[in-house]
Image (cartoon, rainbow, N blue to C red; front, side, top):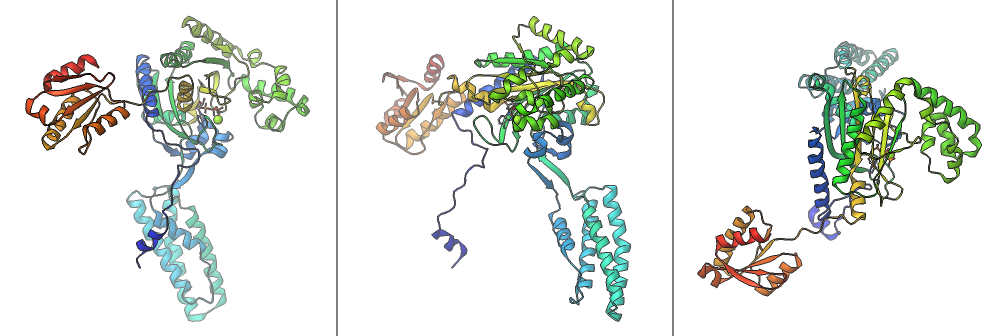
Length: 533
Ligand code: ATP
Ligand code: MG
């Protein structure tokens, strides 16, 4: 019995989307498209261009930009080793696992052959670019030559003498070879992107965008990946729409214009209950001092705080301000405000940002407790919430990140940006009744008979070319059944094509809302529909 036949007996396994991921289906996808089209349009009016960046990057890029101590990098990233040469990796695993044994007469010989094979494959892989030509890889390649020679020499000696001392020496070579094999860099440690700012900065540097007219204004949209606990408004694959302004200037008007742009976008979508919170979290000079002060104050009230906040006194005192715990709110209210501890430079930056927002008619609320979870933020930070989202109500987070480009090896650069959670934006729009309706058809073509079928195909082509949405049933249906289907699909019109219509050259158009019918020639029909729809 073939394998296929055995399998037939069992019910094939059903698959489900992975926890934290989901399918987006029509008609909801129409709303996603509307949101994205609006973003393209609004951002273009602010002079932003779209950047499309890869879904995965070197893990190191995110570790450096987002911060190794953040939740995102320390526990939420999807990471894997990415090597092109699986065979080489498998051979290495095998060689590392092998233990020399006196009782296996072939061990020496087979070990030597396998290492020789590894060395040859590695050389070839480097040659064709499958494995990086790094100094370390080249050294391993070079060192393996003499090591193999010594191995071969000892093997021959041992075969002749069976001397235990030679066996010991052989063992030592095996250890050295193992260390060399482990050192080979077969590929990159990569991660699915948990956010996009790091990649945009990487691209800015890689493409020398500092030589373009400054600032460079970019926006992106697409999926991000974080291994978080899934719940309403929180997914493991979620979507962001974001923008970044990179360049030489940190003029407060840039901050204000970026915020004005998000607010304009939300306004255009008629998002409801929009609330913009604003703060300045200082810079490398003043923030550490404030953090120390905060820590000192928190230590005094440690006993009154919950376990999470107690831990954060050490790891990240700013995050205590984020706490939503009822019992901690009273204590948090008494803590020092960063606004009172900003350095002069930060103060002279923050005040005009607020003034600029006022000039643009952007309504904001100052929130001294607003801190961000990513390391790279400084000075201006903001968060936007919307209604209908429960506790996951932040639809946008953003802020200034001067110095991030330098941290990634680029030239001194100022930067500010934001990321909108598109899933939450959509949820909020749906909650306030802005969901897109099922897309109906303009025309359903009910046809009967072979000649009518040919005419129906021609009619569908003409109507679609004119931009109408057309449903053409693939097999003949009785007119009654066809009209029932047209109704179910929410079609506005049914075009009825039978023998009479075809021979007369006059097509019957039925308006489904009121059941009225009229006859048209082919060109008149299209003209008529253009006027109606
Ligand atoms: P939160 O505090 O809600 O976890 P965050 O500070 O981690 O948000 P950012 O990294 O600044 O968020 O990302 C910007 C926006 O992306 C958030 O305001 C939110 O709308 C959205 N977002 C972040 N994580 C998720 C997720 N797991 N699922 C859906 N949307 C998310
Ligand atoms: Mg988060």
